Length: 113
Image (cartoon, rainbow, N blue to C red; front, side, top):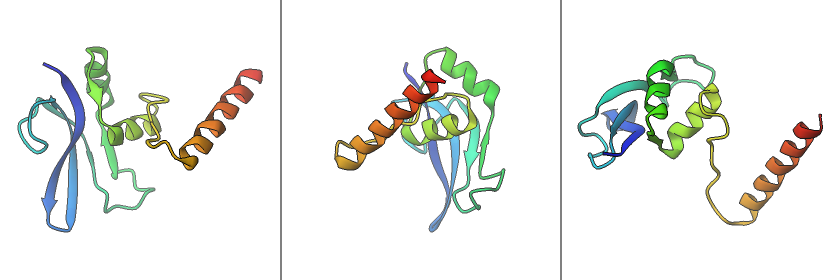
């Protein structure tokens, strides 16, 4: 059984609300899950503390047991400092190459300092 930490959509039409759940990767997106480990409300302002709520202890537990995270959840965990460097830029175009070069330059400067 492969455990994934991902979003499960709730709410109504045009009013999304997401639970961050630990689930078997074979289960449906909004189907059965093992445990709710947080929530995400995209309708709130970016600076609102209730926009992304994470149960850090349980997330670390699942990560220590080999759970995989979805791209969006990886961004949340990176921003919260739980899983640094987990954010991945998708794509192979010119913009993705520029972003990768900028990250490499920043890493070199951090090493030198």
